[in-house]
Length: 375
Image 1 (spheres, rainbow, N blue to C red):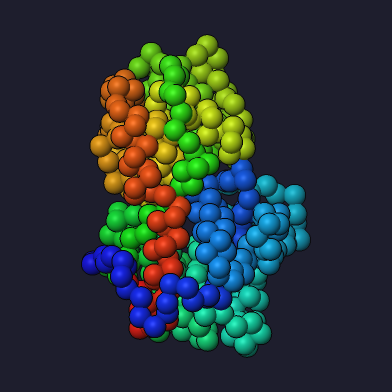
Image 2 (cartoon, rainbow, N blue to C red):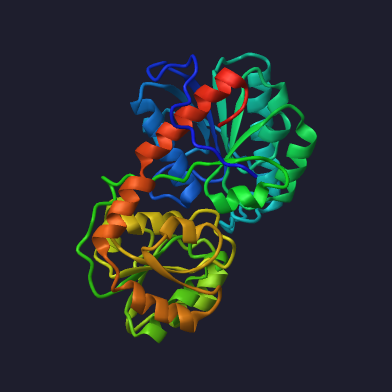
């Protein structure tokens, strides 16, 4: 698998050319603050960034998304008998059947309208986790760029194999690109952090863990590791699995461990900036690790499991432990607390900014229009 830089690749699409971009989001969660996860955050920042640079962006996303983005809704309608069922929030790996069926219908309607020429766009950026935009890419009147946000998923793999055409791909990390390498050649475009919204903080004595409170993020292991390190810990994030929270999180709270709830971005940035270390404990191969990038933007070093894309995001600005090893993670917490906060901030500004992400996607769009392939 070969990845490429997109710098200086312009072709006939000049920097100032205004593009009409169809940005298709994950339909399961609204694109708004506070974000459910990194995919939703990335989509929100990309839509805003492209508009600020003068492009026309139509964002197709779930109801309840940020009205400032002029969202065109992809409604999920519960089937009979499932209207009261609550989604577990584990959009990393699965979803209830009614959500999958309803999501399929929503994307099917959108793609049918696009195929019929109801709307004209220069490029479609597929930022969803659904197979339909991949399967139907060859039938659409505009080129399609798909960003890979997860390790390979069976339904997406099948759609790529049977879809035909010459689809173009990016991946949120080199790790994710390598994961898909047997099937596609994906260029790496790291997710971006708005470093103005995540300012450098003074640090402090406590550790912080942020994200969805679900098993695949394993916050209970962060609690155990912080206790091994002798460090107080604040958890912040939405409870999307009540049974998991009741069994694994609530019994561990108390003393030097508290749960702050699902904070809006300014409050979360303040919490992270006033923490000595950010703990990241994925129980799966994290494709990118946006919470780590946000921490580095605040100058807060990271202690994490060495899984997925986290090592390349964090670089030398954190300490790592083998997956599931809470004792070694406790040691990593103590080590990371002593790392240079200013260096962590500089790393985020240079390599993990929203501005860099948006510019790279602009380059991909232009090259795709110029040559039919991504960079």
